[in-house]
Length: 552
Image (tube, rainbow, N blue to C red):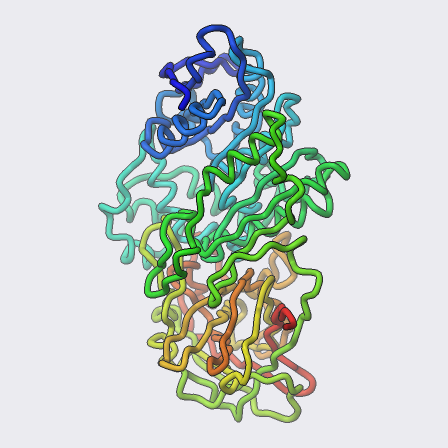
């Protein structure tokens, strides 16, 4: 194994004179004048964490200079931390600085997860000439893609607390659950014991306006000409971004070269990818964990070191099929052989709770009574999750929540054969409300024979944003509207004897802030009203879940 050395707190000047701090790990031969390709990691989470040091040693021992840098205003770096705003420009400067050093071949790749993933995209948009490839993991989407509700979500406040100041804060020391109940949203930061100008500023922009455009990259893939490895997990709470990015680059990348050299890796993981084979009560088996660093090394070797062992010629997508608990290679995602299939809602007007009469079937509804429930924002339907933003939701059991009367449950009969569902899931919902604004949520679950209701994926629509996040308009009480709910993606086999289920409600708290049903300003509103909700499923209003079925 190659001997390595390190140089800590190296100052790297940005174009405006602000200096950022980097730790650099070298193969020992760099001291003798040899040049090596560079892997750059830029983080707001303090570069001296063990996970960064372990990765640095791994890659430096295998012929790379590994640079870990605190972003502007965090850790040992100078300047003011304003999330994302300076990271595109600073990323360009850091990449070109790495390329210009005496120990560098001039070929730079970037690596990182979550915040570290999005800022790679923002840097790529500045088109640094020395950037040759990226590995982006669990990457957040553009504003309002994950949270199409006019706010960034309650647990976003946790994250703002985590990065409050220059060092990581201990957000686990705070009891967040009562904080999430605070109204108005605008002063929730004070309830948590700190002041966040960013939280308050963001809440003043509840539509996708120019304020948010500087954070957007998913509408600009035409400007990016890079091979990219996209990594996430089916239970990542920002999962939707990774398939969207893969699809965006394979269909809209700047060149044919870029479109043909994208790689997707999706495992049975949460936001911490490849961390455990078991999430909650569900064990995904020994195949769930892989040698991820070795996989990343193969990618970097191909694009930075001219040592392609065949990874660039392998199928574009490697996905983990839950239930069967096996990896599968595919040429694209979504899969070309997908059969998008409508499973329609049915009931006699009593689909409330798991004890109701709600069913799913391939048969179109005819004349059926609608289902009704009362949504009370003072008692919102719960979402099973940790209180902090470190992981929002998993393969959790919703059987207890489905005992509530404000939850509609629609399930198939026990399946006679296995059903494989791989790809994006949508719900088309015909609904009315007594309120001028409200929410509708949809959750896809696997109902096991023993009663375990395993969440697979879910989504939400806020009525005022039913036509998109560019503008808001209230609804007319008691008027029927057609809503489309993006339920994200899954990759799961429903075994024979199991049931496919969909849960409909009007809250998923605290994943999403409560809709108060009054149409007030989202940041300042405090007044609540109970909304009477009606879900229609008849010939004129065929509410359904649209599943990406993979034929046997």
